[in-house]
Image 1 (cartoon, rainbow, N blue to C red):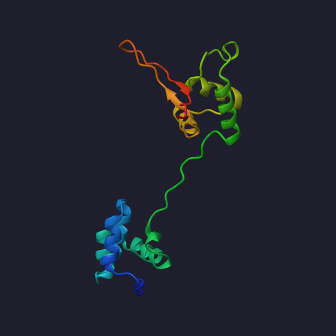
Image 2: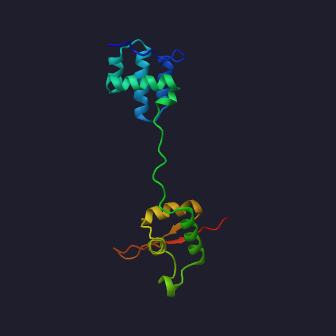
Image 3: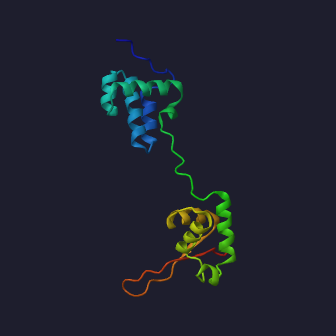
Length: 166
């Protein structure tokens, strides 16, 4: 069996515990506390027990920690899924919203998200949900305008509008 990989000497157990206390991600806290256990003289097996992982994971964490700073142990947040509408399609959608629908052509008197979703499908062949379309239009200043529901089971569909800047 080979010797354990030593930890960096510019940190110690209390400093890693302080970083763990300030973290909000439980996985990051486990990693930092496991390494703090090693700094305090505990075995790698004890560190694995504290972190809730195996010895191989502890070895990987030590290598990541030695290669960088404690931030190297923190998982990078992913950017998420790419929006379905590219810049050109989004620009065309905004132009259509600003011009307003033509009742004879579009079959509606004002744009609702469901109508705009149908227009996007007919125009670009892109299938999108009402929610993702709303999420892409919201940063551009468009909000869903909802009417008060009337009747017991009726649900009013919201129209798009841009609030006036005061």
